[in-house]
Image (tube, rainbow, N blue to C red; front, side, top):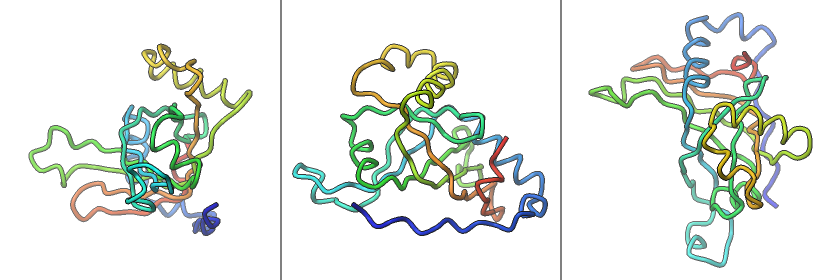
Length: 177
């Protein structure tokens, strides 16, 4: 098992009141407005071709929904490398971005959300299923396959780049709806 992740640095209770409203709004717009994100995990030890990259970051494209607390929900196959990685080390990040039609994508907004991913079961999985399929109806084609599970990312912190020189760290509470 990997070492326990360090405790998330939490902002003082009044951090949200000090965070400019437009910064929080920009972060929430990315989080709620993007149906997909790049999932970054750490490659788990293995006996296959991935063994040479153990411990390296591994990015993959995923569809995302949010629960009522604004936490990202994922539907992942047990056959996928990112799922194997998360089973060994739940630390993960999601990159949400809105840069597609910009001449210079580096001037566009992006939000990196970091936290601990865990599979859901029982009532939590059923609630996640309803929310996820509402956002991604086409996922109903494979949501009930035996190798698919719903996962949730419990956010520790986030990093917003709202454009050139507009960079902010956010506490998990800043992303709550």
